[in-house]
Length: 273
Image 1: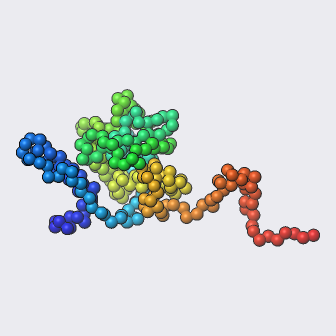
Image 2: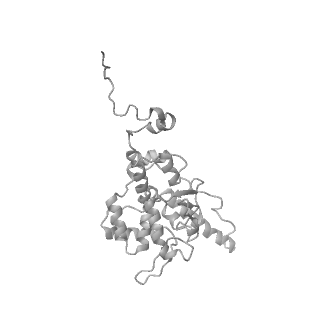
Image 3: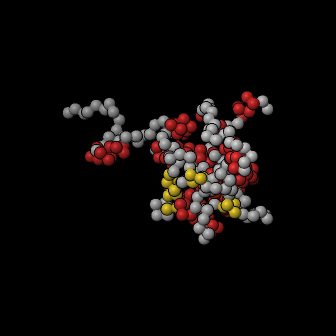
């Protein structure tokens, strides 16, 4: 493939990960006195990419979600899929979670770390300050955690591990792409059209916005600093109008008028004697 052709198919993130690995290898060569200096020291790859098409979000509907969870080959994987769909965590974030991150009283989980392929099994701080967040645990997410307790809670470390299955040894997920393999298998078993695991985030966001949850709340749950990406990626799931728009403010600040004119048609003429 020609270099220019490769640029169209390789994302900036992937190129950055390749550069990181190469820089590390060159530094090892410097430490071993094979090279005098690291030519990539202090170099950071950047490339502006065109914005993704608005249709990039391709969430799973309720029937597909149920089919995916039911098709999981072991209970731990079913718990993982349900948790991902109902917490909006990235796959790299969910495999870094420990039981100590869960606040059972507040029903939240704190997200501070992520394990990517480049990290080689080591949990690293999230990339941005907004990525460090407390995510509300909705009822389906809490149910997934309660079911997962049976498998990993006593050990007190990672919440979600690779389960032992058909002779395969279990243990911590080394990177999030291992989850991609399990996800692909599950969707095939469920006979659900393939989308990558990132669509669990889109699934969560579309559900919350369709239900009328505030955009800024959804953005905070996702680890975004503002609602820009929410409006760009999920505009079609945001209701155009709310029949009750403004009523909450009336109830709070002018309760004496709340509901006073509800259902009355305008333009009625007063009766005269």
